[in-house]
Image (cartoon, rainbow, N blue to C red; front, top):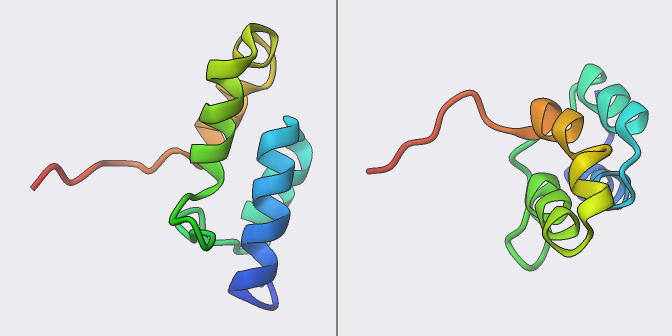
Length: 78
């Protein structure tokens, strides 16, 4: 289990934005909460998406695997 929510989100955001899929996978396997947000209200998936929009190589490289790791199983639109 990740020791603190704040520590998880810092590491996860950095890993996701850098395209470090193995680290993101390891964090999730150890109980990290994918829905945790930083002080901007963004989670790791938001930061990965930001990188994917800015860099086509990121979008075609690590982003699909990051999305699989970080995307919620469902979205409530209500």
